[in-house]
Length: 136
Length: 111
Image (tube, each protein chain N blue to C red):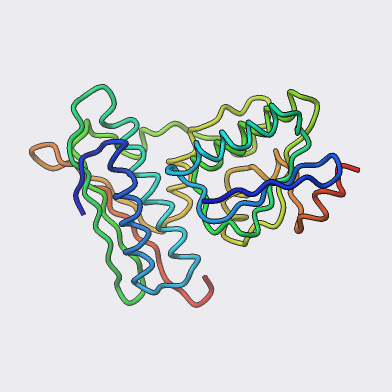
């Protein structure tokens, strides 16, 4: 699914991810994890990537292999490789916690594989993999 | 997302149903802030009907906790599913907010 990277389109984008993942019939924990990872990625693009500029498109692709859930999030915002995300200390006490900043941290925790590339003419592709195992 | 608030003694219990995500986090924040402003700073979130949470939802929980504590109360969580509980744990929220297996246990913890 492709939509403009706007607040107004978030309902469509996140609704699509939720529905497409549910249809794949993977176990509920893996489905939950991939839904969360995709939401954080899409939300980051809309909130930060396209902030202060004309929003470009966001594309979400969801697929399943026998032993994995796959997702791609594509955007045309300025490149933001995952390693550029701020470090989060989840053991920080309440009084020094500022709301927010957990998105990339949780995204990384949720998936087993993550790759990011920018290809001409400035299309960023985030690929996410969540393994499906008996133990999950 | 639905939130149903019930008063149990001097503790308000907000029962969540559905998804606490980027699409619903603001609405939830407004509903809960309203409770705190109405003087219900001893607040329990019954998460047993919550099937999904993202960082936007966590942000709501953290804001409400700060509001409750600023008013001399507290915001405590109850009944999180294993998946929701895992997100709370990974993000360090189980060390910041008091969590209980059941709604009753969370309510009684204020006694």
